[in-house]
Image 1 (cartoon, rainbow, N blue to C red):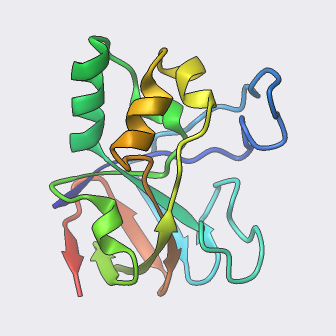
Image 2 (tube, rainbow, N blue to C red; image 1 turned 90 degrees about the vertical axis):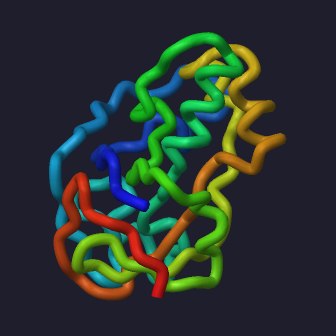
Length: 158
């Protein structure tokens, strides 16, 4: 179980864009990111979003996205999903209600991160339905202690 990639963006491309055109804020793919307890990922749009926010960080499964690409018979960059952490070897939803560690940072899984209709627009027709049917939209989590995580860090369940 490991952290494959990190994605952060200073602005939302989908929230506050209901049924209109998505925003065009860039998604950065740093090799590491600082995490702040109770606040989220430094530089991300949900950093200090609101107190006790359940989505300080979002995780999505690389394994599920590989299955989605196979089903749709197309390739896409996972960054279009706007989840923060791409992990492999685990279903993120299995972490709901649990504490887990990536590198030196402790997180707590809160709730699922349900897919939205934008998925068909940014990935391809059928992506939204597949992600919903397979409960593969991802996980919203809270940052419990501050520290830095980097691509390649192992994910451990506490």
